[in-house]
Length: 247
Image (cartoon, rainbow, N blue to C red; front, side, top):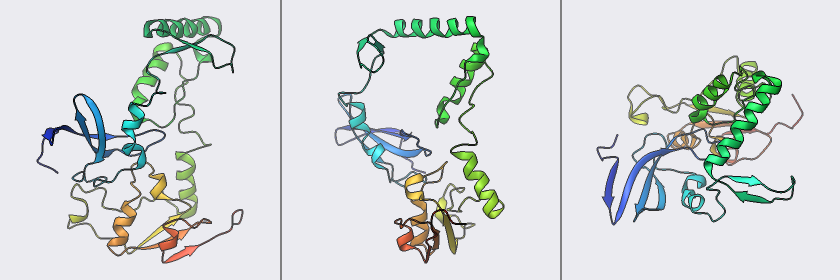
């Protein structure tokens, strides 16, 4: 890891090292360098010394400044003043917003019981503790009922891997070593099978898709099973283009 501090001055900028997950649905935690001048966020770049992403960032991280300073970004609560669908709102204070939510929640609790409220969440590991405390403090056991459901996301991926290969396989891209590809215990895989996945786009659950390219540069051959001609499929040793709807 770098011997540089977490914050330093460079060419008139204050540079802050950090990690970022960007919405929607980011599964990674990439190292970033945040450049600030006169209290304003100027740009975000990848941290080349971070062993996870090695300085590479997706367009969502690169566009963080546009998100922060976008004129349509919501920075305060809004209350509906018209009928649903009319798109009529008025600005209210945070205290008023909290009061409205608290009264509505407690009214539902009094009339139907705390179990009538279900607390759902999507991808966002950093909110797990908050929403579970809210649910249990409210008195409802119905927390996270949709996050790991059998209909979407993680469980279908795990179960399909178990059915196809007998295990939930994770590609060995040296991600379990702090010094990554330089670790003497790591051996570059001769072959990688990518089945119905596009890791360069998906970046699923702590697997950074560009690690596949790192392995390709080191000699790994790809077998891609996918009806689509993805970027990786076009560079694979074997592209098995199965037809949709077939076994």
